[in-house]
Image (cartoon, helix red, strand yellow):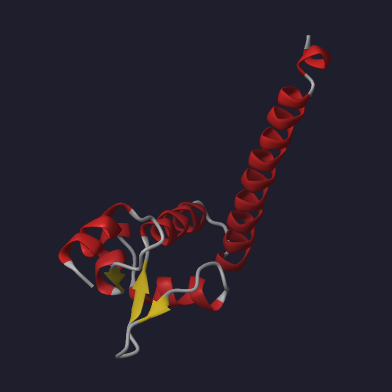
Length: 112
């Protein structure tokens, strides 16, 4: 991998750039919380060659949302389920919008 390849990954939301300590610090939580949401299958960190958990920026946003719910008193399992459902709803809405745009493009007179 060249330096150019590495720099290109800085903008990649899915690149597992953070080991466990840094995300826990960034989120103001414990490493145990990150392990718990991993066990609840909310996020699945990648593993380094040495077996260390590595998190992406996307996973940190998901973890932050789960922490927000837990801080409001939601049990961790329920918080993880809520975040999963929110993510699925957002994806479904994005797909529906794409289909709507494609249908309108295919038949522009029907939209008028």
